[in-house]
Length: 192
Image 1 (cartoon, rainbow, N blue to C red):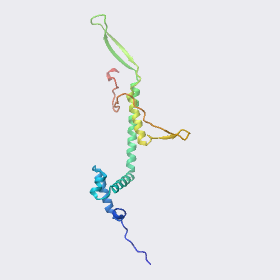
Image 2 (image 1 turned 45 degrees about the horizontal axis):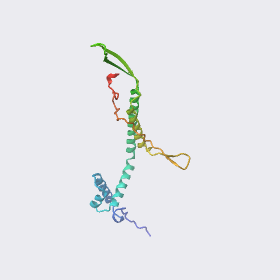
Image 3 (image 1 turned 180 degrees about the vertical axis):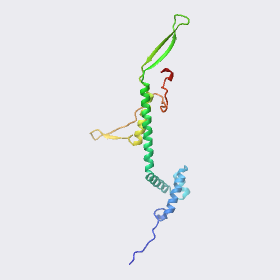
Image 4 (image 1 turned 90 degrees about the horizontal axis):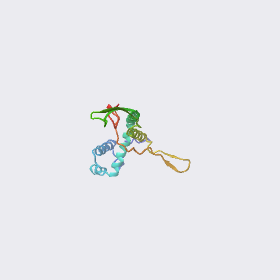
């Protein structure tokens, strides 16, 4: 007896036997409507399917897209890591530069005569501008979050789990931009 040749059926869909083309078209409609900002229950009403089916289709399509575009995701992560490293390096360089001694020249009137002025040179020691350290800290925290290191857990030898957080409290100063700036915070370039 010859085995009967059955025509392959589609998988899934209404009743479990819709053609694959119709299933893919429905998935594309779900993605298009979701991208347009529609909620899952609205999409379900429009397409005449259940909200659970819409959620399942959206989740399946998201996973498929991530699988097919893994190389793009990795490339984007590498690019972001490179940018975070640059921000961190520039912030640390700017902080080191802000710690340097500054020479200022100033004139002041002396109280002795009418037009008597006195010129003096003042050298200021600086401890550095902490705003740059805050920028560097945030760049490191963003980098750790991108790498998935923001919620590390380790054990301390006992059965107790110790939570490790990399989110250091920010310093109480305003943020400053470091990319391409030569000006020091809190002063001008003329003071050098």
